[in-house]
Length: 214
Image (cartoon, rainbow, N blue to C red; front, side, top):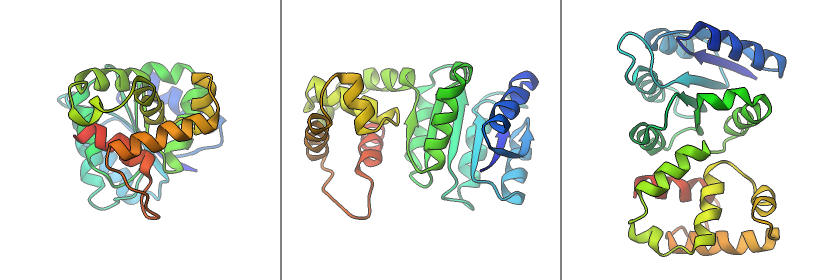
């Protein structure tokens, strides 16, 4: 699997390269600024990008802007965005662009190599993966939304775990319930969020997006 990395901190960038290479990824580009990221993604055939939100020269949202710009040309490119802190505005803006699978993780998650690599693989495979802290902050911010108020506490928990990219089996294990119970909660929350069954849409992803965009 071919990956492009954009991270301005040399130690973290080199660490990401080593982690990914050790786990079977081919790093085809490793850059430290937005323009170089755009060049790398448009000239290298990559399967996924791992991008810091804040890149030189202003260290505001260059990484995020570069990702959004590139998706004009590469709409299906999976992207994992790394952030030092939970930045709700950036998370919502990133997720509002529905093209391409997306992950939003705090940088500290890289320290858990197994979990980090698993998240990268999930996004590359087409899943939406949000850091648990990002999910918690977003749910707190959106707790007054009329659609979300319809959800039971258990349905909220299922949606939160979905946003973290967990499968039904993983959710069932985390909640100490059966997969059948998780499927029931999932079906109920899909209905409450107005997500009808469709062969063309991934309702798990759309449920998270509906929450972020509502």
